[in-house]
Amino acid sequence: MMATALGWVGELAQFLGSLIPRLLVVKVDSRCLKYVRGSRLVLLDPGLHVYWPLVTELEWCHVVRQVVVHRSHVLETSDGVQVVAAGVTAYRVSDPVRFLAENEDPYSVIDDVAAAAIRQVVVGTPYHVLGQALPSTDVALTRAARSLLRPFGVQVEYTRLTDLARTRSIHLTGSQPPDPCKTP
Image 1 (cartoon, rainbow, N blue to C red):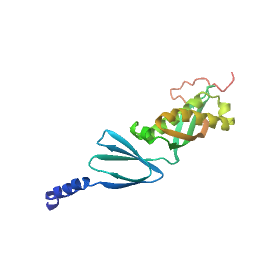
Image 2: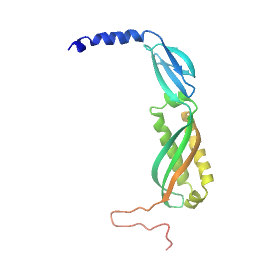
Image 3: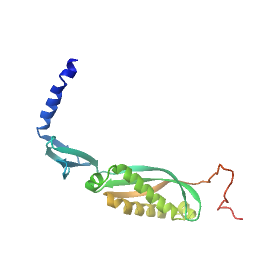
Image 4: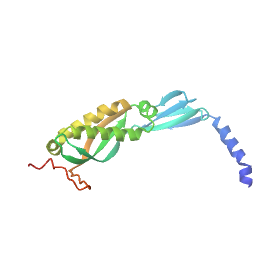
């Protein structure tokens, strides 16, 4: 009972503490966006900075190499072969302002856009090329991911397939379409 009655004392102390400027250390592997009064955006590079908690919000971003693993997708290659494909993308954040301030959930954007690059390459390539020419497939995947992610402030180091397997659809209704891989 006494704790709730005196809860205002803690709130008052917290408010008074927000009136005092604070020190902020940005490490070399990160950048920080400082939103001043909600309308002005300042990028903080590594080093020591001062901010006023009452009128400032902070958002952190790691700019070092990171990796995202893309889940499997069932796709159809350009020659009609159904495959299951999954991949991985290594990237760095090159523009923290575009990355954080212009995307609601920037990390899911990387996953979605790089997975779209994988889909674009797999769907546009014959199966025998995907399976036998992995270096050229990796180059095509990396180029596609780079061009698609550049506008989001992301620099792609590489995108590669981690899994590629033929699959076959099973229609549970009883009627099977003809298999495009079998010769009549």
